[in-house]
Image (cartoon, rainbow, N blue to C red; front, side, top):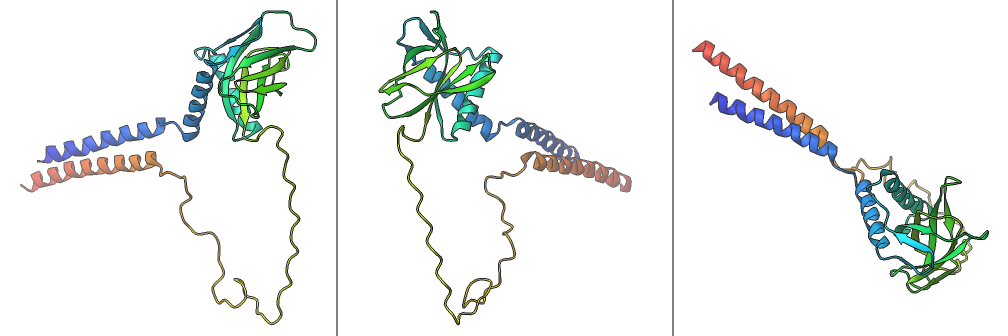
Length: 241
């Protein structure tokens, strides 16, 4: 019987170690969201074609660490432009012809684009070492046209606001109304006897998950204590007998 209890305690200890390792290796919500955006950008790149002679479009090779890093940078840069920006695709754009001084106009076929979408293009300028923003010269249903002076990689981004939509003027603030005489003032307003709020409640903030790794460590400690107790009690009983 003692051996069975000791074996059970040891099994619990081994299980707790596995739970700790699993919790430590779990990806965060931000990492999962980033990976989903990368997959969507690569899938969108497969549908884009060039309608300009000499310009070629290809899907980034994500097995190349440097290329994969640039794809992730493009998605991060788009979020800096607007947190609700949608990266339709990240492509490798190249041009075989001679580039004139003012750049070359290239038209891309992008099925998900509609006329009136607020489209911007992010391009990695390897000479300057920065991501530059390029505003298209034309946005139509399924097509965008922009002028490029250098190429690859390029991200097609749609911002949430409609193109050309004017900003609404802010409304002037209303003057505050004077307080009525004869009303006593209390910390919570006139006519109330409630105690003032002494600070924020001690509720657990939303979105915070319990520390599974810490709980698993406590479980491991309890398992070790149980196993040691069984052995100690067994020896004591044997001595009494």
